[in-house]
Image (cartoon, rainbow over all chains, first blue to last red; front, top):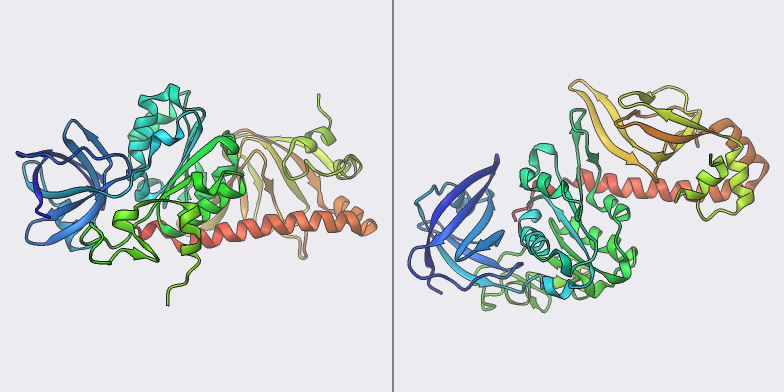
Length: 268
Length: 153
């Protein structure tokens, strides 16, 4: 439960309210995270927040953080050389290898592009193990497109179908406008041999999962990453409980087959 | 060169219609090509047609004091225009081609007359357009929710 010290080795302002920190261990290092997992990041004197892993490389870990509260504001203010405490990695992985030999459909909305980024890098590093691969990315507006440079690189590849849409735009935007779910019919994947990975705001994920299943993808092949109020991250405190699931341990990645009945339960 | 019934057969909105019905609809249609940045529809003008988009990209827009806002983009496989179905038959929004766009323009008065003569055709078409309007309403509701505005990540 004690945080391990990491130092900020790179800091990148992604958007007005979003920062990417690359962290390297000071002495001891945590186990390497698997795509889909999250760490608890500690801003000393303020508190701790669960943040998805956006990348990792030989001990260094990348997290993309949006300023939404006291802890994330403090984390976003960290500069190169500053210390951050880490616990983790926690939670269930995307299990990208389960899609070997299959088509891959990745759907991300808003900051949800950060947790799926390791899926795309894994697929591209092992491209011959997958069939057709498509990434659908939706954001609020063109100025809210995270990782725009990296997505432009992905779009230039011939072995990856990348579609981007925004909810609202002015005339200067030449791309698509509309919900990310509208893009699903456009992609060239075989639903019967497709594994879908979905991450974003919960409402978006629900509609995306339904649209993917309507297209013919098996609901147990549709994996979603849940956001919940994780505190202990080891299944003790119950803050992140969703029906029978402790999202910190049983998630964050779960299948739509597991999740659909839980999503149907209304909050009181 | 493909005939309009053949082109309708390739379009998902009409693909599963029987050949005779496609011929009937095709009788009201002409092929059109619109260059990038050309206006296709203008708000408040007569909604005397709709478009079966075959290629390209179209922005559905609304004029505002801050300039035009793009509400939605449409592309191959989409239908542009539903205001032709109901009085007062006026466009609610503008539509502008973002890329060079090819479509079949269907004459609304012609098709409405055929629907009046053949209620089965009218019912079939209105079911399809009701589905289209439903899907766009759902999409609009999602956009109104502004789901990306509050995600903590």
